[in-house]
Length: 231
Image 1: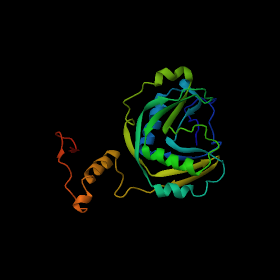
Image 2: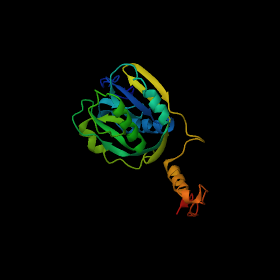
Image 3: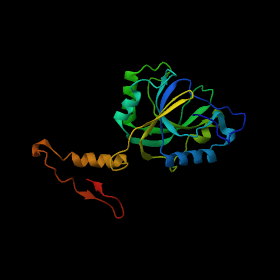
Image 4: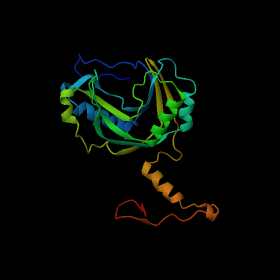
């Protein structure tokens, strides 16, 4: 799953299959291509560590399962949860420390739903290979030579940053064993997180005191050429 891409120097090693089992959530194809294209063009070969570039952008939901078949009931837990609706991609950051593959360059992720789902999994399953009990969702894009880290730390304003996504697929990966799990699709198509916030604000006007009668939402205001904003 993790591998060096053809643009890497030939002596750069692939990370290879995972030693432990994990659940990954691939990013949608459009933003995945944006991230991969940017990484190939802008992260120079001479700045890469042995881990190379990540060619399948994803967020790891849970890591450290015994490297066998997918645990019983795990696919059901994921499908019952359904698509991850509140997934926000943020700015670049770095995991400092002694990593033989290099310093991970990653995009931050903000998603309460992912954190809750990770907590459910850690509560129900043994993860003997997990050495990081505090879950930090992120999207790794490359492994850097530590000497090159200062060149990449302040990157901002890229087209795939500050994006809100819906994730509809998960993948079990353990060695050469992989299995795709569909999380379903939101009814009526994907919704942005801001759409959900606006819906929630409007529905908050539905009160028990009115006997479940729908109350008109708050007045909407907007600047010229801008979408309406709840007030």
